[in-house]
Image (cartoon, rainbow, N blue to C red):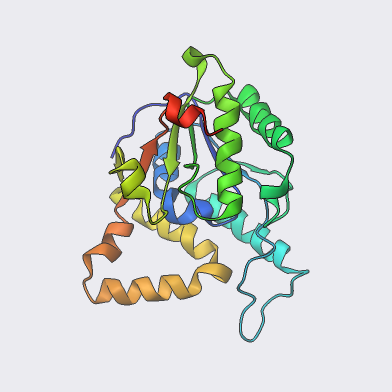
Length: 231
């Protein structure tokens, strides 16, 4: 599949592996088309739940493990511009709002992206996801309308369909299936059980299991007053 040409794509997520499940196929497609892609990952996921049984890491060594996995995921997707932004896992929601907005504004001013991929505010479940999404939206909202990049957002809360309807962007990523799997496998410390379960579902012929590796879905951010007032 060929995606619409973009000047530069900026991907912003709070945790290593946030990119792998929902957007790594889209990222890989852009990279393969020659579009510059920057991935800004706000934390190293040092509070990740999985330390292994028996443990493969301690709470002190897990950040290094996840950093290596993040780099490996970017290599699988072909991303060469990875920004590790230095925030702490599970504390992004407590960061100063203006500091967060300025972090996003700095990236936007430097990169001049025509597209930003992040989470959709109020539909991203995890507090760090929500804080990241709010910061991106606030930064873009401060820009003149005619200069704003597009926002393609991932939403997966239980009320997503009720609040947002059906995704308005569906990318067929079949051609980069192996790159997506490579990104997911790179985060093996956190994804081993999920990959194992999905493999069983694939072997059983469950359509949804293959669908996960074939399509990625996004919502265009809606800049009307109902949403403006929230942030």
